[in-house]
Length: 359
Ligand code: MRU
Image (cartoon, rainbow, N blue to C red; front, side, top):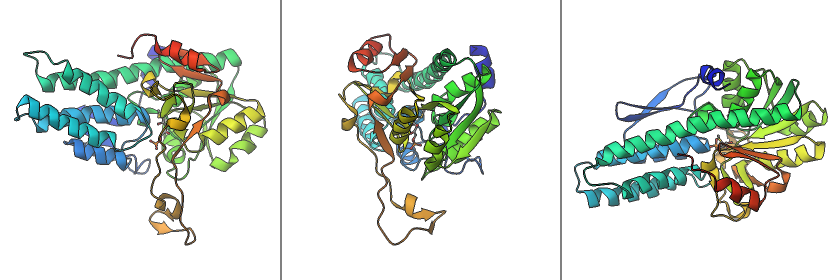
């Protein structure tokens, strides 16, 4: 299956080439494929905040490469000044988006690496190797999770099934071919997928623009549905699994993901279908006891009030929280590269995290 999965890898959104970071501008997809080059941490912080790059693992990877760019810009400074500057750049990057913990996780990996710098080692070289390692290990994690998640689907029912996903947890959101979409791709290769329903994911339309495009490019049968159609579709009885990614998972297994995930989990439980969360261990934040402690990003109300820059809503203010928290007791299974946790609890999450590190 691993070889089949690797052969199916098509889309990438992050490239590190010639000492610069290239990001596929996700605001323009699928109509235009435009690559933007970045040579500073400040530029990458803006790209994260403006969602040129988005998805929890992807913003962590971009931030890791941004630290390399920051070190390059400061290479003529004495080491103490260089490191103080890197700390400031990490603060800027960490503040770009608050909910996905992969961002601070990746920055911490970079910081730990420069704190371990040995005499004679070149700062720039070790940071670049660390960033490449974070990128490569996320891709590996995707492959492992794809297989674990596919096994869960097969174990539940060996015939073709209808799956529903929300937002975009695919190649565009990761260093590989996706978390939730990695599982869906693997299930498709294993002949387990009848069709995939992609929630459009208002207001940014990650489902309509990104997930539907990714799956169609791979030949996975995908149908777009309005977010508000999900309960109706579930009621028909043909959907067996809801499969989503995550931006941060608390120590008790509560999961923050794209706004709308929580109501999907409630609907899934009501209709007796299974709910799978797929995320690398870099998304698990054991420092937060529960999901209530996860910071939820609020974005500009204009994302709701306008369409294509034109006002469509009445003259009222808008609330625009872009993530929500699904309580652990609504989740059937959390799939990570370290293993699978069924019916997550604090004890099971602690046991999972005590297994070997990601990279
Ligand atoms: O606002 P976004 O597009 O960054 O939100 C992305 C999600 O909510 C994804 O489901 C999550 O980051 C997992 S991506 C593998």
